[in-house]
Length: 592
Image 1: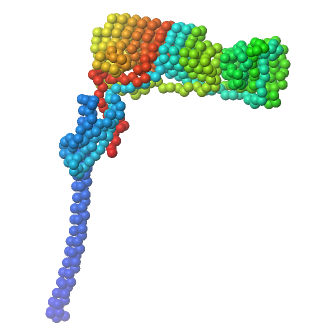
Image 2: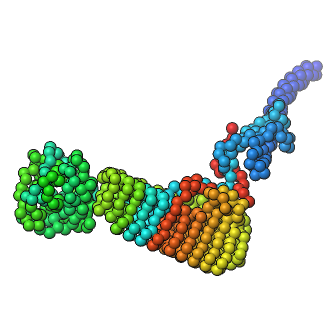
Image 3: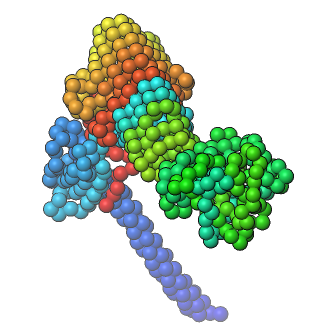
């Protein structure tokens, strides 16, 4: 190849290589531009995101500053209603305060950046503010948990009573109000019954028809708890005795194994089911025959009818009559009588009284015994009790929680501790204290006067000598004050506990101890307020006067009287005499 051709070839190769390089450079430049644009976009997005996050933080801080300002302003002035376009940091906030009730406010705060006229960021948050006082509804003069209530001679209550356990009342005890006793039992079930009715059988109108009986055969072995019979009456016959007797050769035995009183006043002129509770609950054996006997007098113008089935549809028994149930002179009456026999379960809670025990309102209980009721009686069984109206078969009242919770007590303890702590026993007297936590005992000597200016929490016991006075500071106004004792409360003779001097100001004296001596009073205790043994027994004796008593178990010794005050249905308690502060109500923070 000549030199000229070689040069031409080299030039062509150089030209070709230069073109490839230019293409590669163009490609790399394009990629670089794309990557640079992408990176700038990422940077811009990051910057914008950071700016937005900062803006969100800033607008949240401004809005919450508005909420803080509202709480502070309410604590300075209850009438504070809000404000508009208040400057704060790089923005403004506007506050609205709306009253829900005397102790609750709805606060709405809106934050703006840079201002409310032309904002680039805006946020609204609402909360409820609650005054640091507690409203407790004490609806009853006396209320007990499952431990029930015992009332000794001449003990009384002027107000309503609710008990989750039985109530036992001695001579001349009284309740000037209504009484509710919760069921608290597993109900017995009907083991045998015959309810087919196509007529009634007359008895008690002559000596040959004086007593009447119906046999039955239980299918299981168990205790007999209750019997119901289907009766009506003519005029006003005498009371009946319902007896349960074993079988003796196809007729009732001449001795019974259980009995109960069926009062004439429970029976009306129309057939109805009458429940009779037995004074004992013997065990009946499955497959054996027993008899229900109605034993009474005879009078030609005053007598009873027992609902019956002339077709004798009950296969496990028969009916008979006699001139006297225990002389075994029985005759068949060729019919079956209507009855129900309840077995098993456990007996329900009861009101068990004594001579001259009186309930002046209505009485609701599973079993009612030995009491005069001026109002109406609601029950499953009743014995030796009178009432204006009778409602057998009534549903037992349900159990009712005590008025304050563990959380309430803990909050009050926190209020006391926030006021300061006294280590060891506190014995100074006369004294003005509170709010305060005392790690030892509170010991008030003879003739001591204690003025309470805030909630007290005593980790030990509270004891007092003779002639001691405890007063709420006048600064409480219409609010009440609280004293909480983790141990026992044992006052001496003549202890007066008073409110602030205004009406509806009460002291609530609480023991959290789960003992039989949680609150055990002595002579001449006067409480302008509430005695509350939330886990233990409240035992009151010798001229105790209080507006309200609540306990796991209540004991009213001779002559103790409780006088309920209607203001306790909506009693307000404050943490201190200096007034109640406003704070955010937990769980109400809401972004709009």
